[in-house]
Structures are given as structure tokens and as C-alpha cells.
Image (cartoon, rainbow, N blue to C red):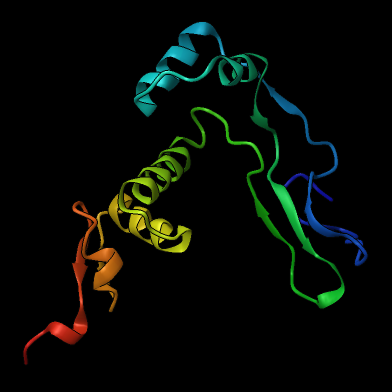
Length: 147
């Protein structure tokens, strides 16, 4: 693998998330940075999470999702998120959790709703039962538009 996230010799026998060669842990956060992180997120972290972020703050390279011998090209994504580099993704994931809990949505619907809200978009779908109850969601059911 090289440093830009490209596999030079993929192992077709590997399946699932892998850490790239020469990946290192990013240094932990200072107390001041940890406080800023909590302020941006909007809540205090539990002590075990605070301790984790004091020691490490994500990885230096994205992880690899290998699909084994099925022929699908590997994909790259964060395995451990870091502050402040991944703050938008962290906020979106927290929003997903809050929407899922608040409206008892299935995870895929909560992800869709959080993504649409985060990016200030309008969702066009035919699912009033779930999306119609999410207050902050701009939602249009195309089957209910008069011509």
C-alpha cells in the first residue's frame, strides 16, 4: 500500500475492515482541546471516552474494507474518528442516534433523515409513517403533490 490509500497488492483472501500498513495513532488531545470537542458536540463525554481521547485521537490513515474474492474494489473510510478533522461526520452520527431514539426509526431511515438535515436538503420519498414525524426534516411525499 502507498500513503495515498491505494492498495498495491491486495490480498484476495482478506474480508472485512483492515488497518493500512504504516498506520499510526494520532496523538491524544490536550485538556483544552478535549473541552472544545465536548463544547462542539454539546455534551460531556463519559470518563472512559475522555481517557481514550487523551491518549489517542484517531488514525493517521483511513481503514480499508476488503471484500475478499468477490471482485468488488476495496473502499477506504475512517475506523476511528478524530477531532477536529472528522467533526462533521461525528456530528452527523450523533444526530443519527438522536433521531433514531427520538422517533423510533430504523437505522437506515435515521441515517437518511440525519444526512438530509445535516446537509440542509429536502427528502423526496413515500414514507409518511417514518419521515413525516421528524420535525426538523424537510420532507415531500411525491404521491401527495397535486398536479
